[in-house]
Image 1: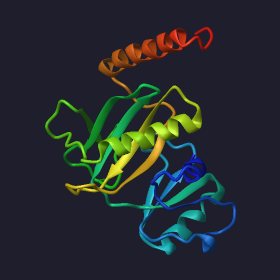
Image 2 (image 1 turned 180 degrees about the horizontal axis):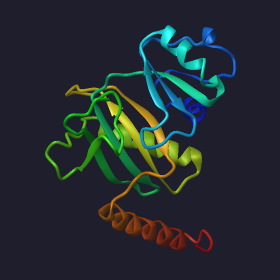
Image 3 (image 1 turned 30 degrees about the vertical axis):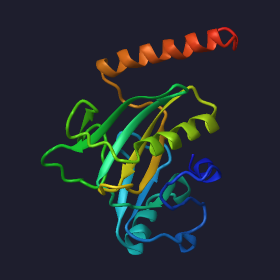
Length: 197
């Protein structure tokens, strides 16, 4: 996924993946280490020094992990995008009393939608959506969800797209929106004569 992001120049964290050793890793600390099949906040670690990484790799195979520079951008969103555009979005807010505050996932965060005044849509939201659409088209997908970290800045904040989710958690509310959007996609394909659905 990260290689594909590079191919189409998507803003993302600098990253490293190799079956070699960390001496080839040219990343600024702190860094995040992610198991290549991680989900729901599992298999993800924050390291502040090379020594911490070396200690970790004594018990873990390097080729099973992706390493990336950790950005301290304080806002994180999940955008659900289809060929019709962004049809659903949430902001992830950390729950009170969470020890791990450096990453957000379903177990430590509350997801709020655009109707909530704390959603705080960035001024460059349309640009972020455009990049998500660009990925969707490049991957030849009809629908996907993207996690995006955004700088806490009023005008034109910087952002990085963390990942495309293969199986994002959804609520009953979200599932109803998904059903409608999937029908929209199917009906559009039928109308465009692009084969049976």
